[in-house]
Image (cartoon, rainbow over all chains, first blue to last red; front, top):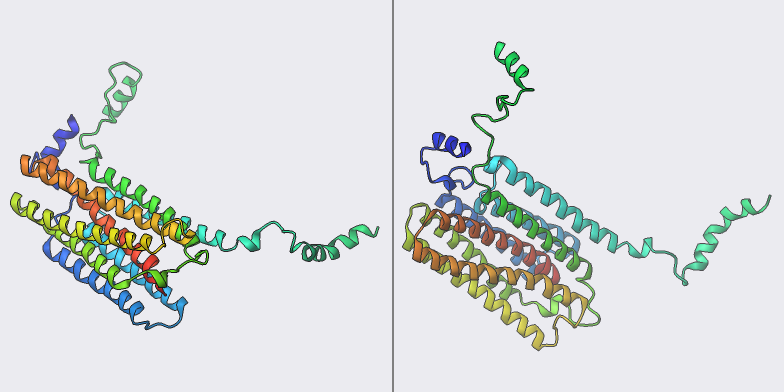
Length: 144
Length: 211
C-alpha cells in the first residue's frame, strides 16, 4: 500500500504506471533504424549463400554466424528496447545469464557429441590397439 | 544519536519502530515486463536445446536428402521478409498505442497478423511439400530435428497469432485500457522474440544447411 503511494508522489502521471520505467518510450526512428539494419543484415547472408561468394565452408559458417549475432543484437536494442536501465538492469542481467547458459548448452553439446568416438570406451575393434598401448606400462610391473 | 540509541533499546520491546520499512522502498514498479521477459528467456532455453539437437543431428541424412537438395532459399528469404515486416508493423502499432489511437493500433495489428499468417502459410506449404516428397520427419534424424525446431517456432507463431486476434477483439471492445496496454506490451515482446529466434533458424538451419 505504501509502495503505491510513493509511486504516485514521484510519478507525475499517477495512475499510468506501465509507461513509467519498464516500457521505454519507443520512437519511429528507433524502429526504422532497426528495420533498415535488419534488412541489410538479412540480405547480405542470403546473397552470400545464394551466389556462393565464399567457397570455403568454414569461413562461410563463421561469417554467417557473425551476421546472425549482429542482427540479434540489433533486434534486442531497437525492437526489444534492451538497455541497462529497464527494470533496474534485471532484464539485462537475466539476458546475460541466458546467453551464457545457451552458449554453454549449445557449444557443450556439440563439443561432447562430436568427440564421442575419441572419448568412448574401447570397442572390440580397437581393443588390440589399446592392449599394445598398455603393454609398455604393464611390463615393468610384471617383471619384479 | 539519541534516536539510534532509543530505537536499539526498544528493539527488544514489542513496539519497536519498523526501521526496515523505508520511505522509498526499492520496489519494482511493475513486475509484468520483467516476469514476461523471464518467460521469454526460459523459452529461449527450449530453443537452445532444439538448436543443439539440430546441431548434432543436422548432418545425419540416413542416405536421404540433405539440406542443399531440399531447401528453397528464395522461399525462405520471402518468409524471413514476412516475419521482419510483421515486426516493424507491430512496432508501428506500439507507436499508435503510445498516442492513444485505438483505430491506428488495430489497423497495424491487423497488418501484423496478415504478415504472420503469410509466414505461417508459407511454412506449412514448405512442410507439406517436404512430406509429399517423402522427406517427412520420419525420414532421417536430420529431418526429425529440422521439423522439431522449425515446427516449434511455427507453433509459437501460431499461438502469437491467436493471442493477437484475441487482443484485437479486446482492444476493440475495451479500448486501450491499462490492462490492454500491458497485454500489448507483452505480445510485442513475444513477437519480436520470435523474430530473433527466426534469425537463428534461417542462419543455422537454412543458410548453413545449403552450404
